Image (cartoon, rainbow, N blue to C red):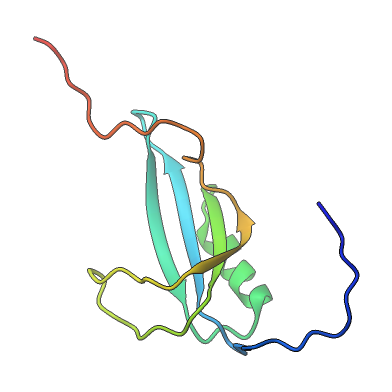
Length: 106
C-alpha cells in the first residue's frame, strides 16, 4: 500500500447514494464456484450494505462493489454494465483456471 498525502478533494463527480453490487461465491462439489449477484439501491450507507451482506452471506465468500455510474433498473436477464469499484472481498476465480465442462470417456 502507498499512502499519498493530499489536499481537500474537488471531485469531478459525486454520487451520494451509489448502487452497491454484492457477489456471493460458493464452492460446488465439482470444485467450481457458483455465483449469486445482487444490486442494492437506496442504501443509507456502506454500513447498511455490510449488515445486509452479514445477514445473507450464510458462510459464503463475498465481494462488495460500488457502481461507478447511475444505471436504470432492468430485468434479471439484463446484465448491469456500469464499471465497479471493489470495496471489499476478492473473486475466488482470480488467477485460477476455470473449467467450463468436463469430458468423460466411456
